[in-house]
Length: 235
Figure 1 (tube, rainbow, N blue to C red):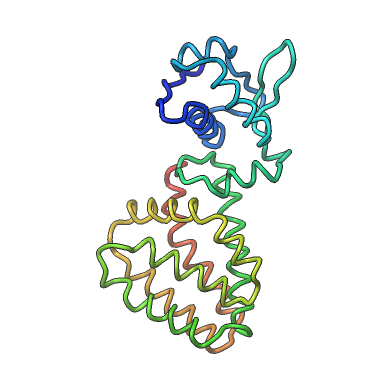
Figure 2: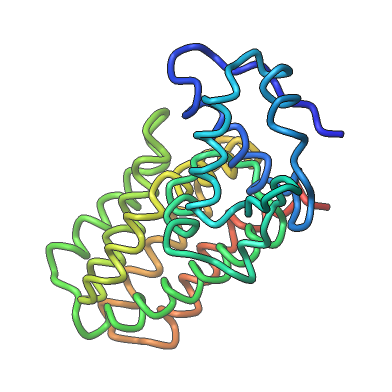
């Protein structure tokens, strides 16, 4: 039986919703698991059954659970049967506690997207965008704070350099998750940013030279530099 913490009083249903989302997205609760009866859960959390029911209704709308009359509430496999609402929650999820399969799928997608952005940037990037990317790469090793902001900005500029506005929108949609994972990767690696800065500079140079194959390979190296650190959590 799963343990459910008591919810804070600020916004009970939202706190419970966030708590349950985290248990599902982290993999603590898996598809096919049944939630305890609502009365029992409400007592454990110290909230009203009404507040709990509102949270569970929201989870059902988001595609994370299914309420089955006279049986209870079962966790859905949102990976096999996603909804626009479940994707929106994943995109805005700011915790680093991710189920391994979601982490792998998310990073695979990001590598694919940024490879395509790097390729398109060779034809579509503005000089001003490349100049800002180069400036970030040059300044990265000289800062003690705002490292995550600089790295996020560099990759966002890459999506803009592609000339494809949908890629930029998707990247911005994943901003909370990207920032959170970036923060953790550098907590694991420490403060040595030399390799990251080196690969950033190399990527800009490849784009300036319109070398699509080299740009794709370099952005994969750049992303893998951080992703490999995060994979250590699952070993």
